[in-house]
Length: 103
Image (cartoon, rainbow, N blue to C red; front, side, top):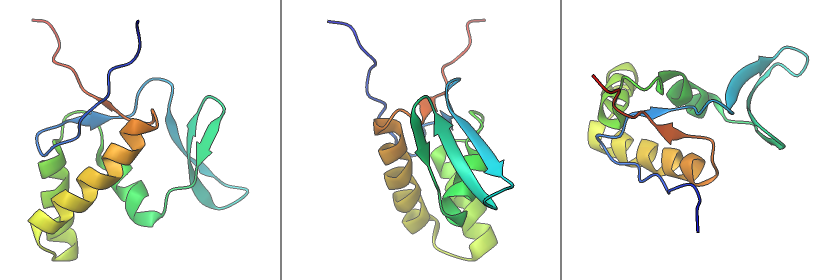
């Protein structure tokens, strides 16, 4: 049996949108859309901000620390919230983990 392995999001995960998923601003509707084949999500403003930081270079902890500084909130609470949100997206196939490149 073959298939995609489930991504487990943790503080050291480096999330990135997979090749088949795109975050796009829809000018006609004035809203952000997360697009994948035959699927569309409408993330809220905070989710959009988190997704913009999912570039494969930042860990979940890095993302949370950046948001904690911006919003003056406790990093550990933000890590928990971001992990939960990203795990949900990973489970739906909208997120992947950056893999180390061979040297």
